[in-house]
Length: 344
Image 1 (cartoon, rainbow, N blue to C red):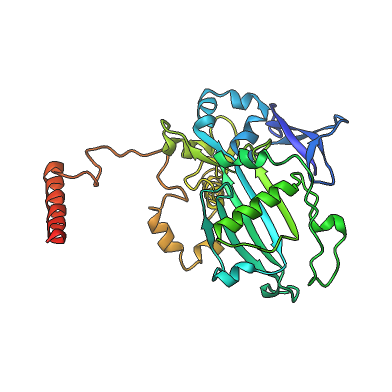
Image 2 (cartoon, helix red, strand yellow):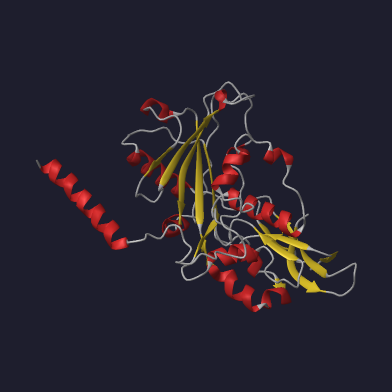
């Protein structure tokens, strides 16, 4: 489609409550998308709108809808967290010789986390080669500027892997990408991987690619709640933040499972059931773990609490102890007894 939603206008009439204004965009061979110079605008009429977007994408939309006082105040209730991933392709899974098959390693170096991915010959329908994938780096927030500082320079060109059945064209060994990886980024990450695994002379990757989420329209990779906000009330109301309007917001940003696809799915399912009167899909209720999951979530319709928010008080909260001082004294005495027994 290559269109960007730039504005939502109100309109009157039974057949149209809103006009969605889309600006034409263009995507180049590297995958970078920008507004088209032709200025072509497409208008779509709608009765209801579902905005499945993160915070920054919502902020980029011009609309009277976002002038609502409650929405203006609570749209900023989440922090936008930047994220960065880098992948290396090797001719063999060298980490297997270290006893590493899957999972991750964590370090305080700027690569932060390294994940061990699959090998081609082990994949269903894969080629009979040892070509393997490593997530060389998965990091966020404070370490991203380190890698951003290495973006300028000679591009990494890689090399033709020997085992591949079909030879790649040179420009396809390292994919053309919006964020083109540089030789210095690869060399730096490769050195840190060697340090992390206490190895020397590791094979060099034949291909590499990275992606970072900080620019528009994403703003970041995920979100976290800020302090000082009633997140129970915001999670409930954000699905339909302006009651007079049929505009709905879903996604991980304003969910209990921020940073995970479950947050987006739960807010979407909850919104569809409550505001569109849709039934829970049969494939979900027939799942063997559905009843256990529902009980663990207190039957709150895919949200961690009942809407419009928590109504608990100190008087009716079952988790409040009857005599807190006595309970604390008992715990302390028990702890001292354990310490004394160890010392003996």
